[in-house]
Image (cartoon, rainbow, N blue to C red; front, side, top):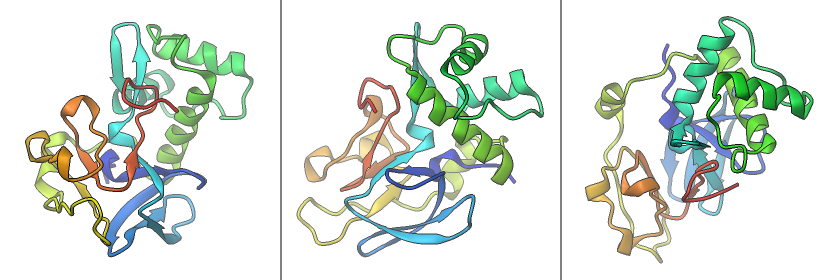
Amino acid sequence: MKTDLQKVLSISGEQGLYNYISQTRSGMIAESLVTKKRGVFGHTSKVSSLSDIAIYTEEGEMPLREVFEKMKAHLGEESAPDAKADQKVLVNFFAEVVPGYDSERFYPSHMKKVVQWYNILKEYASLDFVDEEEVNEVVPEAVHIGEGSEESVTAFGVEASDCKRDEHKCLCKDNGHNACSIDFQWDVLASSAVLL
């Protein structure tokens, strides 16, 4: 089964990766890819969708999906270096996989996250990813609730033209996004929008 990176989440303060399950009145339900345990995360949770994460390169930003694909082509069936590996190991690894990465803005701390996420996806999901056309067929309709509402909804598959920035808190990468939130802040790893 292919992995939909739009629904794979990194949640601040939580180990590993989570799969988006559904929204609730007070936030969302997500399931750990590793333990398969579900949890409810409130509207103050800092959540990042892997589809919205990119790394800095000398030519601009490279989406995480593309980084993963380059890693897979380089590694074959092998796992990526351990996140606890020596910093030099990680730096040398990314110098081979993404030779044009921006060493001044893509830090070893970011590298640790990327290799950890890659290994989790390899073991507990799939490194074959859903295409954008397939994502658009299955995402639910967006629901927007104005700022100040008691409810908080995370909506997937929002088109940039549908995003009413004045009505809610929304962090949109380059004003074109696949995930839009009202109170959830979608981090962009080493991007021009938000830095870790």
